[in-house]
Image 1 (cartoon, rainbow, N blue to C red):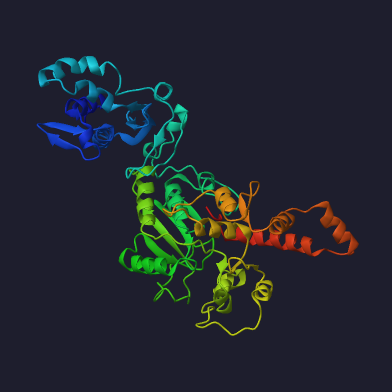
Image 2 (cartoon, rainbow, N blue to C red):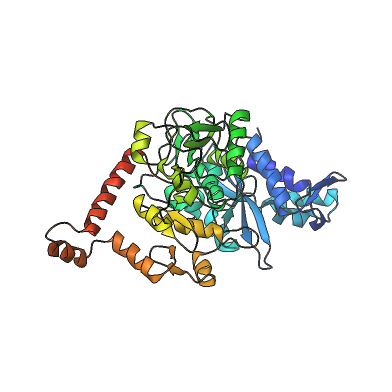
Length: 456
């Protein structure tokens, strides 16, 4: 096995800086023509072959272009450094072979193959990290110690577990706080596609990482895709019962088609690993497995009138889940003369006349609006921008979107017990409706905690 200095020397000696071959490097007259990304990728490959842990990073040049380099860990001594091959490739470009070999040792003394983390950040600025498919992991890293958490430098079998109360994700930034490393990036991919994740786990004793997702709110296109994947690739896609935020139970039958609600409630995206694979390896695998789904409108806790009249909203009812009830959904909607407002009240839901949807809570409604008002390229926009452009209200405290001031006022009232609540209860000489709702909410949260770790 070669050491870092020998590997680095080989890469830069055979390199030729040539912007015409950026991201499509070619060997010309024995030299690899390319740019920083090409030489960094080559160095990573060679380091891994020789037992090093290594990953791609970048900084921003003054001209606005990215400058790629390599973060690596020597498993023999545990030392973590940065190698910056393109800096030395540029020095050697244009020299004859004879000149290269006479200059190479002088160039290596520049220490670009073994840069100190703190000093590198001071020289080049904040760092961005990537998976092997160039998916961005973390941005704006200014602390050298923080770099040591890089997914490519840590084994998947040695996770740092996160413990937290159940919490619904209302913003993509929450994923960094709630989701553990190997599943984090895939959850972000799914978030941007409008697909909710219920929870995730890295079961190190079994060497498997899983992301749990609700099935019933997938679009018809994504349901068909998942059913096909469950048949063709059961190693990575599997239906689970009973559903909701606790799809950790027994494997269940694959639905016949996207209209089959007989028993499937949830599914997992999973990846197994061995002791030598890193967090980065598993993260990339889960990202690739998540990318196959299409963008859709977020539909968890969101229903149409037909959904209500077919009982689709009852699939996630706690009693139905606990009893393992099947065939809840009716093949055709029942006839009803009730208004949408009446149906909402009858089923303990809310109704939006403007968007013609029934919804369980304002978090789900906000996620629905976030995907409904994507930009022209299909990307998620800021909630503040969505609200200002569409006559809606953005509340910074809750990070949610509301249709009216009254809706916002009702949301805030329902989430806090105020002196007015206590006065109301005292005036009625009993327990007010608002207090009852808060007690009901409290016990619902207890039930959710019994289910699992919650949405991550």
